[in-house]
Image (cartoon, rainbow, N blue to C red):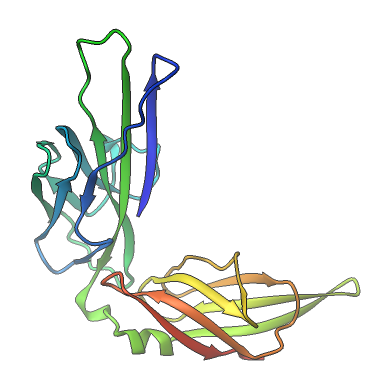
Length: 235
């Protein structure tokens, strides 16, 4: 999930407004063979909000009316009372069968009320984005199948006498793999990708050659659960 605060301020000192519109779950796995499925959002604020929803490719510069995605939302605009919930229907508008999973983003744009009685006004909005994985049922993988199809290879390159060490990450599955963290030799790899796309290869710079030919990872599955796994590194 990603969150962005968009502010329009006409005074210097204001009370912060925190987003209170949340979705049940941390991601959406959309079965591309289905016509629709639903998600539930809730307003945990103590005030009314207007919520605009749409699906796009994740670019924050996108506008709802120009979004391109195989899924649309209904309702696209609604009001939520404090503590109230709303079911959003995700409707499949695509006729294309993809051989690889596609990543889109469900956007929730929250607009709080304006105090018309005050001369000092602020409109502080929040846009939350949740991953939406658009997946054909035939390409779904279990956690164990996914792990078997990830490969890690150590590469050493001679750059004018200076040895550079790299880690090649290869995802041979048709789905995205989401990483929470990765560790080699008890050192967290801060430059490790958080997501590796289907049938793709990433390379990560290493400070030095690992002492142990093993990588330990925390991976996020479809339900948002984080599980730990280790794999050997190929030399």
